[in-house]
Amino acid sequence: MTPQASPLKQDRRQPYWGQIMTPRSGKRAPHCAVWCADNGAFCGAFDWTRFAEWLRAMRPYRRRCVFVAAPDVVANAVATLDLFRWYGWRIRSFGFPVALVAQDGLESLHWPPTWAYDALFVGGTTAWKLSTAADWCIRRAKQAGKWVHVGRVNSQRRIRHFQLLGVHSVDGTSLTYSPDRHYQRFSKQLAQPPLFTLEDTP
Image 1 (tube, helix red, strand yellow):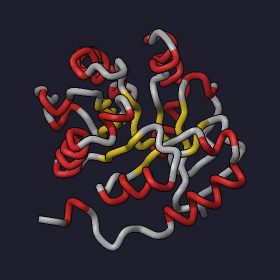
Image 2: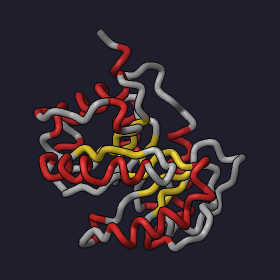
Image 3: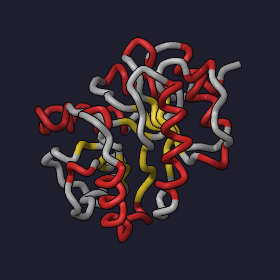
Image 4: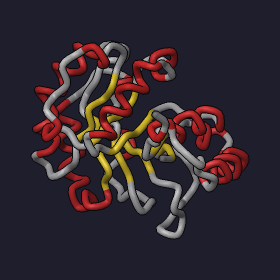
């Protein structure tokens, strides 16, 4: 998924690219065939009133939306689960699929029931995101039939890592700062799926 600030203008002929949006993107239509939404909490205090207003404005495009991430607290799965219980159903009431954000420690906690979320957004610290604990969370979500997205993936090496785990999408800011170079590199990587995934191994 490309950031909203990326100058790339993808369309339905581009099978590997979507767009990730936040309230800071404004109330304009996504320019990609599919899109998802982050909550913007990483950049500051979460404002539900503003977020709800933005969701209401984006409802005409909800059929192309893969998920909307519920509010989260970086590196704190306990606080994130509390926020999900409060806001998850509210996001869904606007007609959007909702994502539970995976933060450090989620592997040791009681997850919401599978009907309560539609996707897993893997956040957390870099160390946790690349750990076996995060791998376990990814496998659990995929076994439940959920879409799995990983945030802040800015290298071919990390793309390969998460391809092997069978995730459905990733996002990163590389395309914002050097779009021409990174677009070609990432397109080549995405066009070469692995021969097998780690979930296929015994």
